[in-house]
Image (cartoon, rainbow, N blue to C red):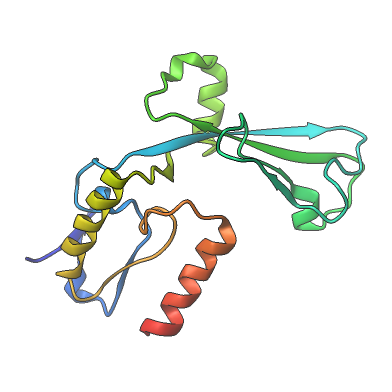
Length: 175
């Protein structure tokens, strides 16, 4: 095989590179859409005249998968920005079969334009999907210089710290 990435203007052959690191959903890399994910909607909310919302030193609060929201993040804690107002982001899981018409059209346009809505956020960790993922991994092993890194490429439900650790491990152990 002579694998490549096709863009609007060019073909980029893997053989021309020392390493190709894939962070995309592994099934999409092979031009397929078979793995199941849960999506997400992210709602940014500015709260005027509020120094902090979350408990002291907390940047995010994570909820179990059974809750309506997955996570609330307070950006002032992360960025250390000093302001009289605060910005929080509420992340809501969306099932993969959701009809976007369930949300007001202006909300969806705003969310899609700014990357606040995606159909593939959290890998569905069923036995069937994990077996299918492993078949894609086996296909990928046939390409010598192809490496998989990150939440979607490794089909994991990771936080950002785990995702960054995956990249750190890859660089330190493979190159």
